[in-house]
Image (cartoon, rainbow, N blue to C red; front, side, top):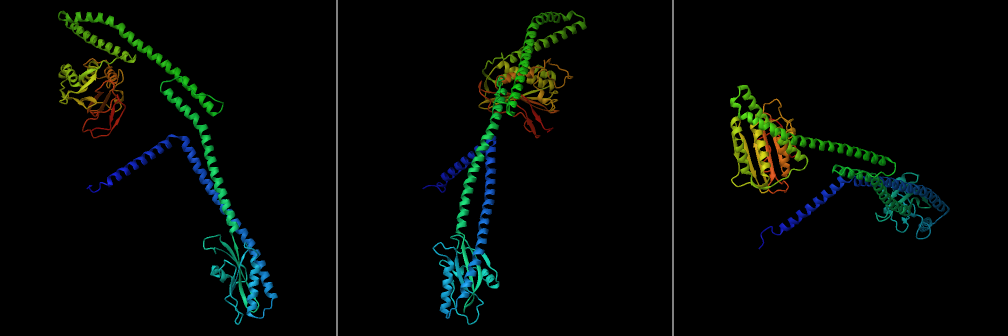
Amino acid sequence: MRAPGALGRPRGARALRVRALRRGALRGVLRRWRGSLQLRVVATTTALGLLVAVAVGTYLLDAVADGLVEERRRVALADAARAAATAQAQFDASTPRTAADVEQLAGDVVSALEGPGPDRLRGVLLLGAGGSAEGAAPVRDLASEGLSPAGVPAGLRRAVTSTDVQQVQLVDLSGGTGAPSLVVGSTVTLPRAGERELYFVYPLTSEQRTTALVRRTFAGGGLALVVLVGTVAWVVTRLVVQPVREAAGTAERLAGGRLDERMRVRGSDDFARLAGAFNEMAAGMQQHIGRLEELSRLQQRFVSDVSHELRTPLTTIRMAGEVLHDARAGFEPVAARSAELLMTQLERFDTLLADLLEISRFDAGAAALEPDPQDVRTLVHRVVDFTAALAERRGSAVLVSEPASPCTAEVDARRIERVLRNLLGNAVEHGESRPIEVTVVCDERTVAVGVRDHGVGLAPAQLPRVFDRFWRADPARARTTGGSGLGLAIALEDTRLHGGRLDVWGSPGHGCHFVLTVPRAAGRPLRSMPLPVVPVGWREPVAALPAGRAVVPGGAP
């Protein structure tokens, strides 16, 4: 046997699929609606046109129907007055002797008033008035075929018997199955029978057919008008939107680097002037960007040439400095100190030249990646050992947290080590002799290394400039490591070369947290961030900036 509810699960699954399809269709319609100006304009114009057509058509139809009924009423009153006068004249001219003669006279007059043929002009009812004189000859109620005395409203009968003025009322004698009728009532006097009620019934069938014809005409004309309005809106909107689409496409291609793209100029209208102005702007941008690119190439070539040219004299000066440095024991104290300072500055100069050459290679697009499978934990320990002496001098303990299993990734070991040296060196430099935490985390696709110090930190306004070249958070602050100001810029370029991210978080007085994230397979896109940039336990909101920039904290924890 099936378990209870086994039959309901497929139905529930089908219902879920149907709802998912509906939601997908609705999202597609909304996406199409938001993404197409032409669709919105045409739909809105058509809806407004339909609304106007319905409102105007309803008003005109009501006006036509009211006019037909009013004209029919006027004609019916005049005709009923003439017919009642004719009937009264016939009654007055007759001298019936018996009750049968009176009834025969009444029947003849009613038949004469109906009109000949099946499509008679009017129906006639002759009813006994409630106020008949005592002793008058009895006359039964007479009605044309298809009419019943019970169909005459009681209110109309009271109004007719209480006044000598003609009374008219719109009555549906068909019970809702046909056209309504105008009923016109008055009183007449029969010989030997006294006063009687005479009613004339005028069907509005012709007016109803005319109104139906007008309604169909209005509906067809309104529908055609709405379609025409929608078509006109589509054509006009296309004429307006098409140049805008062309301008948007041209702008996107310009933004994509195709600086020779231009809009076609047709005619001399407003769009032609817009296209001409757009083309002039694009030409100006192309020239300006060309000048900037040429200037950038000149600057890059200058930096590269100067760096290479300085290599030879620097090598000579370094050799001389080493000779002086080695012989400083026989110098006077001032000269010995000068030899030491000279050697220190030559080392900084050599580092600066190396960094400038590396930056020039990045700018020229000549930097190449040489990935090999490496255990990132080994690279981290190698860098920690390299900076151990500096950390000891600064009084900072370096604490490494890593997983037990290898974190292997296809990376360029030289470049990753350079990134980690820069991050750890900065942490030691600005860590205020507090512990520095290095965290290694990896998942199936990504490896991340975080370097966290608890030193001076960075203000929110400083974080976006952390990776700028030659930028220092505090230029007046003394440096012990002889940095060139290009370390983080080179670290960012090395990270990008691996297809990874380099992010930073910082807060004044609470230190900084740099996170290097690279894919485990070279050339693969970065899919995850296994190590959060914001330190665990930080309670304040933060605002994230793009990869390779910074995460700005909302305040102190």
